[in-house]
Image: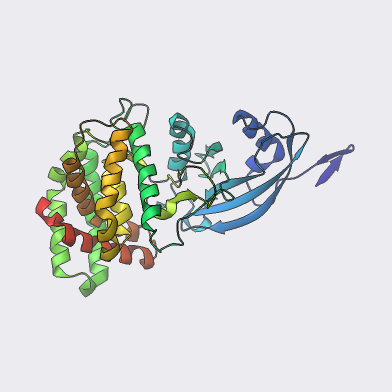
Length: 363
């Protein structure tokens, strides 16, 4: 706190971006339509933590004057120091989602964003988001899978989000960017280089059967990519849709599921999110117990929200296609130095799903 000519001002907490300065917060909340009168007087850090690639701070706000229903707390998201300005730092991409695309989505699907900025020169970025701590919670602690009821609610929310952008005429124009066949080929060439180093490092921990599967996928990648390049039955996919990126209403609270962490979003075949959620994150017994019911719920929700011409059989085919493609995910995760506790378990689970669903037939 500082005093100048009898006026009391409250300083930005140390090591936080200037966006949390009271005047900046006041302006952001006014733009967001949640602060008509009054002004932010003081900001304090209530809690902070690091995720794998980002830093999360819960901010408490105090106001001068009558703030009405203005939020008493906000979430500030910035780069995690260890991943700042690395290939794993996708803050620019997430800022673009919340500032350019989220405003076009129906309320109640993602947290509200009051401010977001990426600085090209420094690489610094931040997001100032609605704090849902008191009303919502994760289904479970990572990496415990959700209950059937929780999983149904999560997949329903995911289908609602996909339905908003399903074959939207502005995909690739106003919303997102299409990868060209040449882009896909270049990406696969990069992947092949990562895979060679990955396989060398794993040695006999990567069986010959799995090595053959990877080689066949690389060889067949142009043909397999035709599904994406058809530009039909596509949407904006989350890209990291494990169940711990969904917030469910707490007991006794009537509200909707919120989806967050959009640093990997992009135009894609939407089943890529379903395959990531189930085939990569769940061991076979749990996946087999919920998979069909969740795919049924997903399809029913798409139809209820206006998606037409997409059959249940097409969903199954796309899901198996996505599961097969996701054998690339552990290699990409390894390539950006995520810990083995992430990519090794993902590798084991997705390979079991590929075998269980007969995905090799697609090759």
